[in-house]
Image 1 (cartoon, rainbow, N blue to C red):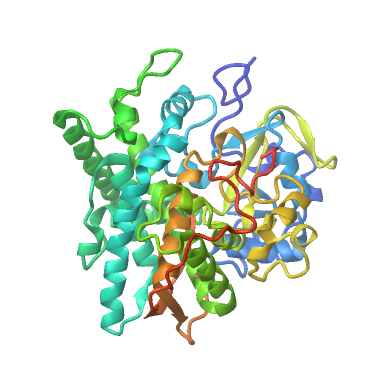
Image 2 (cartoon, helix red, strand yellow):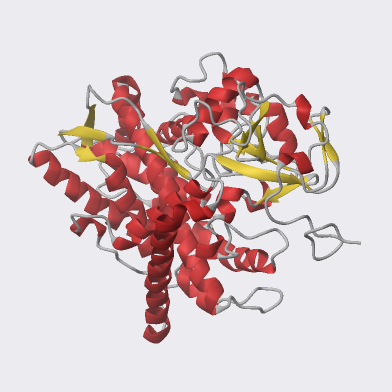
Amino acid sequence: MAEPGTTTQDALPKGFRSAEQGWPELRRIPHPPYRIPLLGDLLGASRRTPVQDSLKYAEQLGPIFRRKVFGREFVFVGGAGLAADMADETRFAKHVGLGIANLRPVVGDALFTAYNHEPNWQLAHDVLAPGFSREAMAAYHPMMLDVAERLTGHWDRELTAGRAVDVPGDMTKLTLETIARTGFGHDFGSFERARPHPFVTAMVGTLTYAQRLNTVPHPALLRDATRRNEADIAHLHDTVGELVQARRSGGGGDGDLLDRMLDTAHPETGERLSAENVRRQVITFLVAGHETTSGALSFALHYLSLDPRIAARARDEVDRVWGDTAVPGYDQVARLRYVRKVLDEALRLWPTAPAFAREAREDTVLGGEHPMRRGAWALVLISMLHRDREVWGPDAERFDPDRFDAAAVRARAPHTFKPFGTGARACIGRQFALHEATLVLGLLLRRYELRPDPAYRLRVTERLTLMPEGLRLYLDRRHPAPTASRVPVPDEVPSDSGCPVHRAGD
C-alpha cells in the first residue's frame, strides 16, 4: 500500500514534511537554546536573514543542527563529511524544499522546481542540454561581449561624472540582458532605463514573497503581499508569453535556447515541450540565469576592490593572456586561470544560491550516526560547507583565491565545493554562468582600477539568492596596457578541459 501522500508505491512522499516525520532520533540533533513554545527558535533570529542566522547557529551547534519555526522543524547539514554523504546519488535525491516549492506558482515543473517524479524535468533537460555545449557557448560569446560593452559604456559615463557605480544594480542589468539576448533574442533595454525593468521588479517581488512565506505561520498574514505577488506572476507570464508568441510568428531565431524549446524533439522519444512548459522554462532561465550570476560578480568585485594585491595579480594575468587583443576570443576566457579563482573564492564565501535540499531514497543512516526514513530530507547549507575549517583551514573566513590552485583542489576531498548544487539536478547553466562572469571580470579589470567606499561594510541581502546590499565602487580609468605578444601562463590549460574545481565524484 502506498504511503500517505504518494501516488505509487515507488514514489517518495510529497509536500512539506517536518523533520519529526523522517528523523527517528531527531532529539539527538542539537538546536538553538531558548526554544519558545509555538514560535520555535525565533529568539534573536531575523526573517530577513535566515541563511546568515543559520551560519551563526552552525558556529555554535556543529555540522548538523535543527531549527523550529512555527511548529515546522528543519534539519541543516554543513559539515563536509555529512554533505558528501548526502551527495551520494544512489542514496539521496533532490528535494524540492519549501522555498523552492513556493516558486511553483510561477514556473510549475520547470528544471529548477520540478519534483523528481515529474517527467517534464528529464524531457526539458535532454532537449536543452545541447544548448550549453561548447559549440553553443562559443556562439553566445559575441553576444556576451556586446552586452558587456553596454555596461562599460555606462560605467565610463559614471566615471566621467565622478559618481560611484551601483555594482549589484548594474550586474543585474548585465546578466539579465545577457541571458535575454543569448537565450531568447530579446533586449530589455536595461541600461537605457533609470529604473529597473518591470520584469526585474516583478521577478524580485516573487523571490522576496517566496522567502517571506517561510517566515509566517500562515499565508493569510501576507494578504496584501499575496495580491502583489499574483500581479507579479501575471506580469512575468504576460511578458514571456509575448516573447514566445513573437518568436513563433516571426519564423524562428538564430538557434538560441528558445528555438531549441520550440523546435527540438527529444532525441529518443520524439516528444516536444508543450507551450506551457516552454513558458515555464523561459521564466526559469531568465530568473535563475541572471540572479545568481549577478550576485557572484558583485561579491567578486567587492573583494577585488578591498585587496589591491589580488586585483593587481588578476589584472596582470588579463594583460598577459589577452595581450593587445582588442576583443578577447572565446578560448581566451578559459585561460584566465587566476581570474576564475577569484570568482570561485567569491562563490565559496557567498554561494549566491546558498543551499540545496536532499531527501533519502530509502531508509538510511547519515554519516553512520543519524537514521533517516525514506523521504526524510535536510537542507545542505552551502555557505556552512564552504566554511568548514577541517577542509578550508582555520582562516576559512578569509578571501584567498589561491585556495583554488590546481594542487589545492586535488588535495581536497570531493563534494566540498558546491556553488551549483549536486548530482543530476545540479545547475544546467553553470558553464554559461562561469564563462560570462570570467569574461566580465576580465574586461572590467582590464579597463578600470576599483576603489571601495571607505565607509562601506558588507551587508548581504537574502531573497532566495544572496546579493551584497548597497555596494558602490569608485572607478579610475586605466592607462592602456602596453602592447605585448601573447605570453604563456604557467598553469594554463586547454579551454575545453574538465572543470578544475569539480572532482570526479561531483
